[in-house]
Amino acid sequence: MEETLRYFIGPDSNAINWWQMCFRGLLVFILAIILVRVGDRRIFSKNAAFDIVLGIILGSLLSRAITGNAPFVPTCITCIGLVALHWFLAMISQKYHAFGLLIKGKQLLLVKDGQIQEENMKKQNFTIHDLNEVLRLNGKLTQVEEVQEAYLERSGNVSVIPRKQN
Image (cartoon, rainbow, N blue to C red; front, side):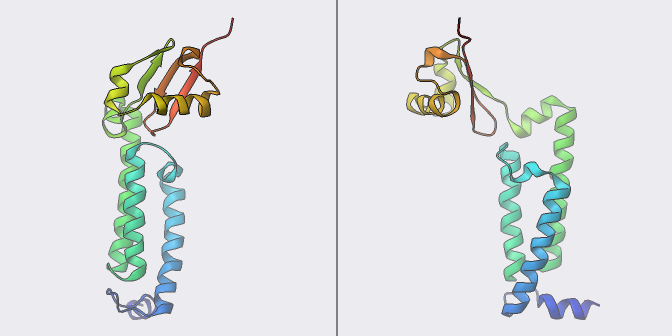
């Protein structure tokens, strides 16, 4: 069995031929689909750095498995372990809010009652031009005074709550 597998995936080096790389690519594609479906869809959505880091690491590791720059089976097992760790940490952060804040971060208030929160804007190097762009795109607003609240979310997106019209 091991020899048959070795024949199809090639050696654990970059001395693989084109069809072994294709076969590796097929296996990695199937594994990646399974990992995303079993792990959590949020792995590749626009969420916290916690999710983005896993996506980057998985992409890097799986590409190395395809090209033969890393041992195939141990690399795939490592990816499975990372997705399991991500899932486990997400469960812990769901149960313990403080832990969630530690690994996922928290939102930051940029505007409250039409007033810009200067200190928070400075903390994130967020300019008035950035804020105006977000207001136009997300809130369909043209002035900060029209905003009840605006938050820089953990995902990096900005949510805008317009003031109620009288």
